[in-house]
Image 1 (tube, rainbow, N blue to C red):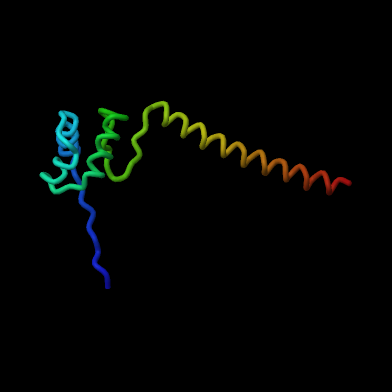
Image 2: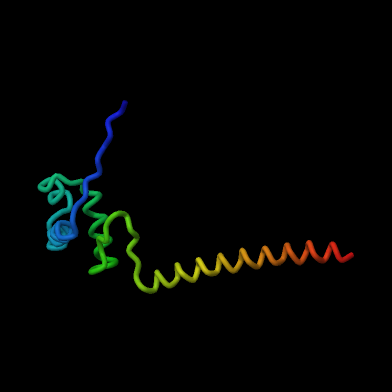
Length: 101
């Protein structure tokens, strides 16, 4: 059997410390080597912090959304539900109109 890799997790404070080091002018590659991290992961943390600031690093793969993004997602979900209901009603009208003939 293959080796099972365990996923490392880092708390929000650690990620913020790493982001602050990079934003203070230190190269991501240097910070990565000093902290035994992947530099691509550090760059991703910096991008996330630049985009969401205080709302960054929610954890467990949860998508960080601004209130506007959350509202858009909610409206898109509702739109999909309404479209499905509309399609069902169209089919029902077609079925009932054929049986009346």
